[in-house]
Image (cartoon, rainbow, N blue to C red; front, side, top):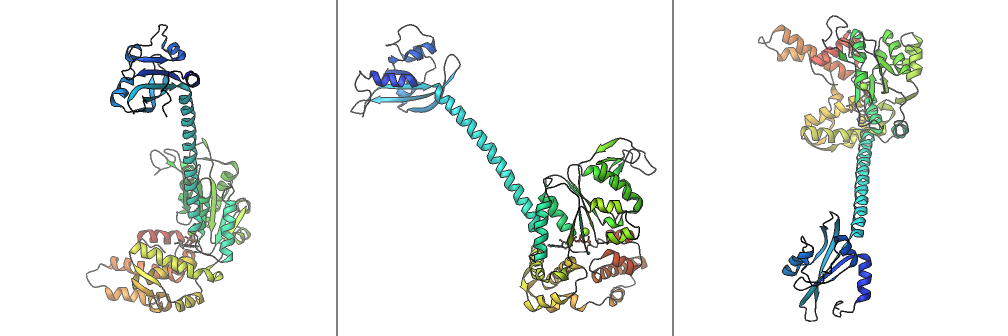
Length: 462
Ligand SMILES: Nc1ncnc2c1ncn2[C@@H]1O[C@H](COP(=O)(O)OP(=O)(O)OP(=O)(O)O)[C@@H](O)[C@H]1O
Ligand SMILES: [Mg+2]
């Protein structure tokens, strides 16, 4: 249907005019109609009907459309007063489809709507981004829980508990025997917290010589003691500001420093050594220990007030032999882990071995299990893990130093041999104690800090 076949389309024009700035031309571009509003906006008082459109609106695109016969819809056109309008230019055809003219309708109203739509789109984009971030955060926080392998009731309860308490800033004391996964839980708590995108700083109080713990934790001002760095040093607390700090093996913290720690926890500010400027502190504090702090309090080795201050919530991770149903899950997880790390092709484990492994006491807990599976995977490389792949079933500590000496020849210096024996023997003792450093240090009759120095030197990670 051709709406403009007849010239008496007054009603239609009026309707269009109420919505749009309208101009109609013939096929040559001569104006046959122009709305009052359009004339007003163009600031034209003369009668322009019969004039060529480009003489009235110099930058018009109407001649182009008539020439190319390509209509434009939603074109943004700038009027001579500098205002933008949305413009549709539609060709008018007769019954034989011959072009007889063109109608151009322009509107601010649409532009306004477009602006609103744009704003809505921008808002949606912002929301979309916000949700994407939330999803990322959720994924991350899930990954915190996902890294805790285990589906025993006891582990599930602990997972539920940390989901509830991670968001609050309260201190948490994580206790449990060596290798039970205290650090794994600490990582999960940080990932589940609102601070997950901030720093997570860990400090092992047993690995740092006692006289250095204070400067490690609190930092020091330039030139505060001989041997200090020229520019001073930022402490771990300050470094962790805004995030989370894990005071690992807290039971090893010297009693003198315990009072300083208590002050920090209470006043929520620190001072670098040799500096009296206080630095406000916003750090979530997690502590972990495999020592019985309560007993240490009774023996006067740990400050009672500090104990109660950090022990607002205690997470006790049970030993592995109290959650045997997790063993199979953990084994499969470690097989997958070491397949990926070492590019191995272990496809599983003989079910009978799993049952055997459940009978073992696991003094080194999950760490010991992980090392046993790792060793078996590396030995086997592919296929199913079997009894003979587990060194744990035929470990003999005494023969180790002999082995090293047998391998050695006169081409090795005595120092090299001593180091090799030392490294192997420490490794063996640690395997025997299931990674328990205190126990190993006792067997080796050395200080724990000294043991840590050796572990670092020989790169022993058990
Ligand atoms: N539930 C678990 N899921 C997966 N891996 C675990 C789990 N528990 C422990 N592990 C693994 O066992 C090893 C020891 O765990 P972690 O370091 O957390 O123990 P810990 O309790 O902090 O030991 P320590 O008292 O000796 O410091 C790590 O390699 C860790 O990844
Ligand atoms: Mg630990």
